[in-house]
Amino acid sequence: MNQVVQYSQIDRTFGALADPTRRGVLERLGGGSATITELAEPFGISLTGMKKHVRVLEDAELVTTEKVGRTRVCSLGPRRLEDVEDWVETYRRMLDERLDRFGELLERRKESQDGQ
Amino acid sequence: MNQVVQYSQIDRTFGALADPTRRGVLERLGGGSATITELAEPFGISLTGMKKHVRVLEDAELVTTEKVGRTRVCSLGPRRLEDVEDWVETYRRMLDERLDRFGELLERRKESQDGQ
Image: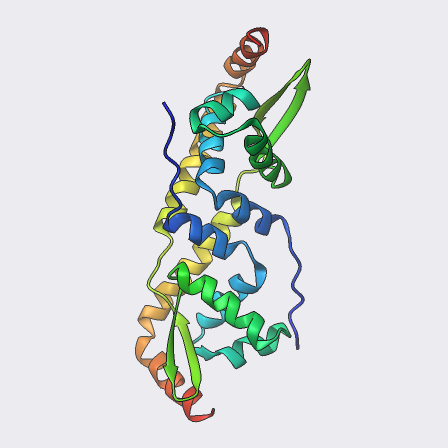
């Protein structure tokens, strides 16, 4: 039975967080809203570059933007990363169980190799 | 002052987790080691496609592989995602504080807009 692979919100979230500039933007917006210009300046990147990062964060619903006159004001979005936390917690629990069953896993591994 | 942006282990980890097939591989390996062929089959993807996913997981140290005869056996790597958990927890704490200070933020936002 094949697993159906669908890209979803959690993929966009992990992808958005996989960049230090984008994580930095989220940390900056935690201190209050900012324009694209204000966000770009401390990172020393172009407005175009920052707009791309903000678009990725918007697609992941981590940031919302609002056009105000000639500027675009960015704020933290509503997402609270529960899905990311849940996944990471489940993974870590699995690692713990794995360490507990290390001997058993060595045995399975041997069987798997014999079966090739 | 510009922030120095350096790609690091946590970037590779978030990037590796941003794909449902790669998360599925980690969940599968939690049950025991597997060959590339065994990993590819349930996802209905090619061996070449699965090798690429495994390489991304290896670069993030989430998976280790070992050549055994003519097959490559994949196992969970040593990484325990503490950095990812720490970042997500810090971000969520910030969101909580932000909700508490909502009125103050509205004020800052107004000032930021007036200042443009």
